Image (cartoon, rainbow, N blue to C red; front, side, top):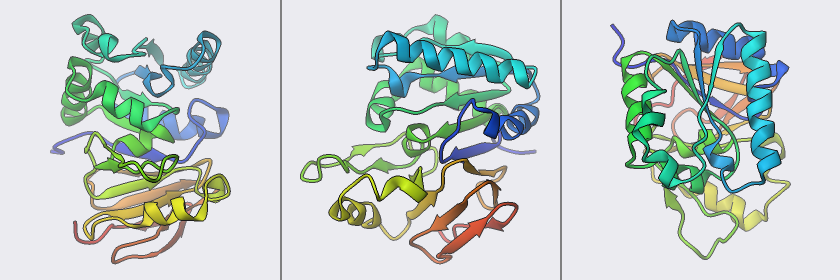
Length: 238
């Protein structure tokens, strides 16, 4: 019996048709039709942008025959609410979507909502993070926008993985010096680039599977290399 549910890290494309089939498989692995969506990483964005996340999440839920539970957790006060935390229970899939990874981790860490997410994942719910959501699930988040400032702690569900989402475009958006910051990770952490419209998933945190249009790039660690759709890999020692 597994000690936790399926987990997935996604480079981009949450709630969009390109990830429809993949999200359906995550929901199926979680064994219920309850699709819990947290827009927390975008919590400081405009009302219209937050409504966008709700709408595309609803569209995806309808396409895959799921029950959408859109949790309006936009700040730490929201994340402290027991009534919102209770709505996570029994999820087939819990999804952390994009935005600001630092804000996402600091907002959820040590709250009833995060406790409910972790508890349900350990009980068998699938857990996925896309872009900021993927970054926040690791041990740390480098501050690539303000390189002279320290990074911030992640949610540490995956203490051995530092994710770079949008990998095929990411380094075109930031200075070379910031790119090098990402690669300066402790030896036990594998820096992992995930292209857009691409994901990795695992049931045991040992064997990982690649799905999507792009590739996954292990940039540090024992198994440095590029892995494409339907290939598998491990992160080596952690």
